[in-house]
Image 1 (cartoon, rainbow, N blue to C red):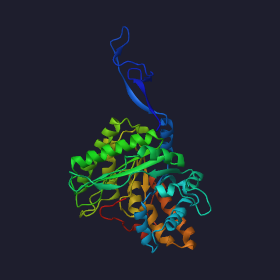
Image 2: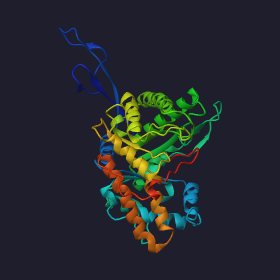
Image 3: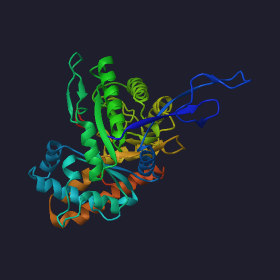
Length: 391
């Protein structure tokens, strides 16, 4: 693990003053108290900031293909394929070798198996991504388990051994990480669950940065429930306030992180659906109240929305300037049509890759605020919500 050092920032002069600056020193003849405090600076700080900026580049977003083997198996089963490593590798090769993908995609989140895989002709997947100027990322959490003492809620495991695993992922070529925890509105959420989610994310973020990986911070607020959009806003503000409190407590460098929030929407079972403009208004209100402008990028999850709906909502959020890069980190909202086009057949690979580019370009335009749903297929308009899982 890289050792973190600390430097002193002199508030009165706004200059870096080195490690020997003293707290509360007064300049001779001056009544102004000079205050200095510690800022965490690891050996990777400059690289982290540059990586985050590269991922948060105009017109580009993240392709999330970090599904576990079990989840990937469910998707393969939907087109009649067995859940084997060969089939998983074939599907991910289709995605990661799409010509021109880097025009619209800046980062790809991989599952551990995929990080170490190669194409059938021997090219490492991480090299395929680099050739397209796409940053390789890695899912590092170990999944959700029941949280004792809560209201049937969950917590995310994976901190044990995370430092050594992160160091190995960095050696393999990963430059950012992802840790997904969840908050359930129908289950409360309890103060215990919110605190556990926030603390776990903060520890993961600090460990990731110490090992050269930009952490994606993702406290997903599940769509389950029949609550109105105002209730989602209330919970989201509480969750993100807690998250940033603990990020600061753990000395996480905000310029070297990315966020992956849920959009602020009504519960999936709520009788009234919200328009893209309403979702954009509520979501941006929450973000402006809770997220410092030092954070370079906000990469939304699609949350079980249809491909078109996720893109329309993102487009609505980019109709005026934001303090951060507002973009996407989509899984099913980029892959759904691709998978159905492919059907596991080699002769369909080119058509499937073209459908991926269509979806990636649509979301690229949405990031720039220039998207129109005119001409979208009926398949792309179908919702993909699954109760308890909105990834």
